[in-house]
Amino acid sequence: MLKLKINKQLVECGTDEAGRGCLAGPVTAAAVILPDNFKNEILTDSKQLSEKKRAILKPIIEAQAICFGVSHIMMGKIDKINILNASILAMHTAIKKLSKTPDFIAVDGNRFKPFLDIPHQTVIKGDGKYLHIAAASILAKTYRDAYMEDIDKEYPMYNWKQNKGYPTKEHREAIKKYGITKYHRKSFRLLSEQLLME
Image (cartoon, rainbow, N blue to C red; front, top):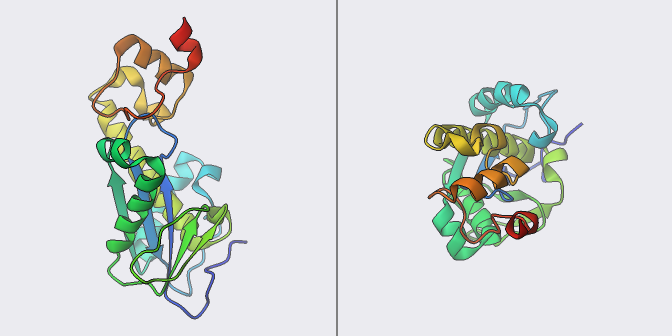
């Protein structure tokens, strides 16, 4: 069973990002404050859930959360400040969008930079331990997936609706064949050693 939050008595938001390891598209983060009576049997780390279950959970989280924020950091910015800084910036921007300022921030992973003067705690695999981080992981993933499905219409040859910009063999083969687009992250190694050598 996932716990609701780290500090029972504080207004606490959970935050997480999606798309860090992708070759194309934004890195997307969400921040969520859940009410103290929130319960959900199937909510867990978005990576453990099917696309169908994530689609069911998204409107439930949006309807039941006290507030939530979602933020995309685009490719040019990722290339400029690097993916770690872009991930943290995405989380900061998502927290900024919350209509209520949290007293405490619970962060998935092990890296974060202080936001305003709000105390925070990083939690490795936090999306499998706390409901608000799991909720943030669902929103980050579903909003990012929707973005990738949208740009897939513009560049169907990369099959982003399927691979969501991750470095699948098929995605790398398409980069080799068609080159890169404005949605690719130029600072990433877009071709594997094997494809470069061929």
